[in-house]
Image (cartoon, rainbow, N blue to C red; front, side, top):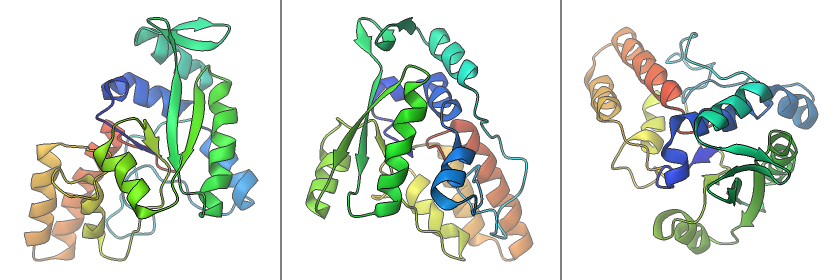
Length: 212
C-alpha cells in the first residue's frame, strides 16, 4: 500500500504510521492466503540476501492508530475521524484486473473503518488511466500495487529513488539515493548487504508505504 507523499495529509509521519497501525496484516494473510506467506517490514523481501531483521515495524494496534490521529489534529465523530470539518477518507487506486489486490482492497476498508478511517476505491482500466492518476493528477492518497522484486536487490531502487519515474509515492530522501549508488559501486556482496540494511532501516522508518 504505497502512499502518495504529494498529498499534504500523508506528508505527516504520524498519519502514515496511524494507517499502518490500523491494518491487520496477519489477518490479511490468514483470510486471503490461508496463512501462507511472509509479512514484510521494508523494501526487501525477507528471503533476499539484502534483508536484515530488526527494521522498524508497525504492529496492528487500533488504539495506537486513534492516538496518533489525535496527535495529528483529528477528532472522533460519529462519521469517523475528522480534521477541520473533513472526514478522513483515503482515495485508494486499485487495478481491477488483479484479483489478489482486489481481495486485499475489500478487506482493508473493513479494518480501517474500525479506527475511523474511510476508504474509497478508484479503479484504472488502462496504463493511460494509471499514468493520469499517479503522475499527472494528485487526487489519490494511496496505490495498492505489487512491487516486482527479483534476486537483484537494486531492483527496488526504482520505487524509492528520488528521480525514478516509477517512484509513484514521490518518496525522496537524499541519504537513500546516495546509499543505492554506494551499493551499486561496492565490489562484494557483504559490503552491499551492509548498505542495503541501512537503506532498509531508513525506508522502514520513513513509512512511505505499508509493506504487506
